[in-house]
Length: 283
Image (cartoon, rainbow, N blue to C red; front, side, top):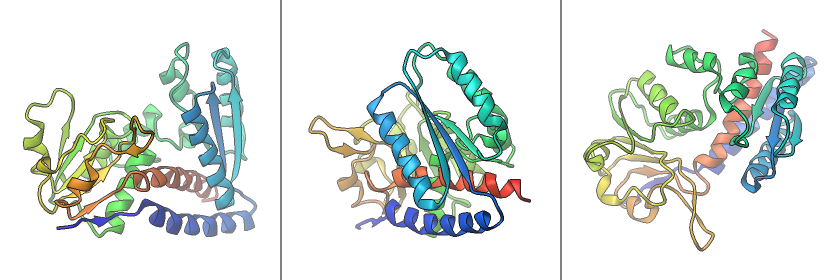
């Protein structure tokens, strides 16, 4: 068996074309979707992520604002800027690029973003809405995974789904979305006993551990759909996921590559959330 490759670049391109059309319709009514991105410090990876987000906005016809601060900035300046953005009608989505420097209280920063503009879906109010099955915003990476499954014709209903990782950003919301799609969900983590016992039962396996090529072929049920959220840099500078792609591709029925899989979908779903926030304003 050779797995079908779930191409994140191709799916993202199709979705973004639709977003651009919807953004043009909003512009005709006097509203242009607006996203503000705050970056604190000079972390190279964070700079790349922010640049990609700003570029994606421009390509989709969105308005974007990039706000940078030095790593030693007084947090109160950032809180004051967030308050201004919360009140700015031209801004429909706000995100603060994580991680923040150690002198910041990240939870307090996320809480300072207005829930109606929290397009990352990290505010406690939005997390609670997701838990209740009525999300305002879905965290971007899990949202992208669900789009992948839908586009591939994979219905989670009645299937065994296993999520590797329990982070607030991916693992927990991913489990909730699969549960709401009527899958039977198991969440595994660093304290899980006999991890392979669980992964070999999975019809849908989502890996979000941050460990290079951790999931091997013998851990995967033949015919499973494998979604690799991880992105790791190897000593030779190349990128790989949490899944041993070459080996698992011979066992799975469908698999996402790294790079070119979930990554493009994460930014795409950030655009989706920002667009939905702007559309909500005009209802």
